[in-house]
Structure formats: C-alpha cells, structure tokens
Length: 222
Image (cartoon, rainbow, N blue to C red; front, top):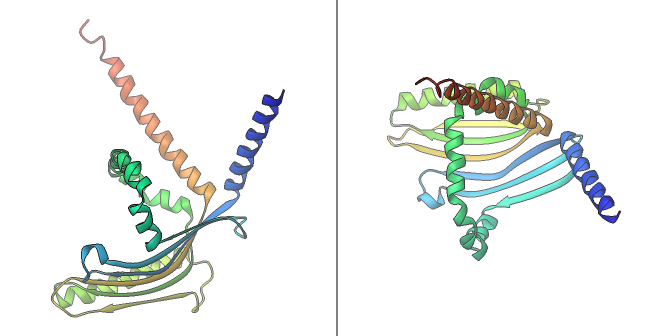
C-alpha cells in the first residue's frame, strides 16, 4: 500500500511538472556578451552572461539558471568534468552528426515560425569589416535590413528604450567583427514540444518507410 502511494505521488509530481512546462515560457537573457575577432582564439568571446528562466504564464519565475564565463571555466577545470564528461564526447559528436544530417528540417522556416519566438529586448552594437570597402558597406546595409525584418516579426511592443541596434562599418582591408549584445528572447515550451514531436514523428515515418522497403526486397531472389 505504501509503495502504491509513493508511485501515485511520483506520478502526480511528474504530471504537475509536465503541466507547468506546458503552461510556461522559456526566457533566454543574453547579457554583456562581448565578442572581438581580433583577439586570440580562446579570448574572442571575452564576456558573456546568460540567464535561462522558466516562467509560468510568462509571469511567475519558477526556475532560473545563470551561466557565465567563470562558471564555465570552473566546470571545465573540475575533476568531475575531466573524469566523467569527457568520456561522453562521442555522444556529443553523435548529436552534432544528427543535427548536421537534419539541419534542413531543424532550421526549416515553417518550423521556426511555429516556435513563435518573441524578442522582448535588444541592445546590439556591431562593428564589421570585410576585405573590400564596397562589400563592407553592402554587408552593413544587409545586416541592418535583416535585423529590422526580424524585429518587425518578433518584437513584442516596440519601444526605443528596449530596442536599439547600431551596425558600424570599419573600413580596413581585413575581416573584423566586434559585437556587444544584450537581448531577451522568449518562447513557449509547448511550441518547442510541438516542433520536437513533429521532427520525431517525421523521422520515425521515414525510418518505417526505409525498413518496409528493405522488407520488400528480402524475398526478391525467390
């Protein structure tokens, strides 16, 4: 009887967490990100601070994770990471291969639209140089146009205090990219679940079709 109640409580907690996830928004805050291509490889990304929050009804935070450079360095240098996590690099590589194989599906425009991503805040200062001055000017105009299109589709309520971006050309004959970024991105967990379900279902259908085709040729020698 006690085991039954324990199982019941566990199922209730799992159901509660699942319900909370379905009713929650994922909020990703990128704060004080600074990238400079002129720096050495391991110092190109000088600063970054990420906050990942789950907010019930987009109002009540119930989970918050902070990620910064110091924390990542500590994790990398920890004995646990070196002894355990490095052993799983093959799995990570497998995940990368899966993403590369299915990148067309993952980054499909329709799927991205289904996510209904909202941009709550943007503060971007970008300086860019390409090998040619004309191409640099064209690149600046193109990037500015793309950002304005993205903002038109994703910005919640336009306000000059919340949305600001400056793209500055650097006329030097070498590739340079300097980025300072603060932004807040918001999307509903239920939309993420829906996209994952669609992708998994599509993959399973394709797998079933391949296996059924193989079965059709099993007796082809008879």
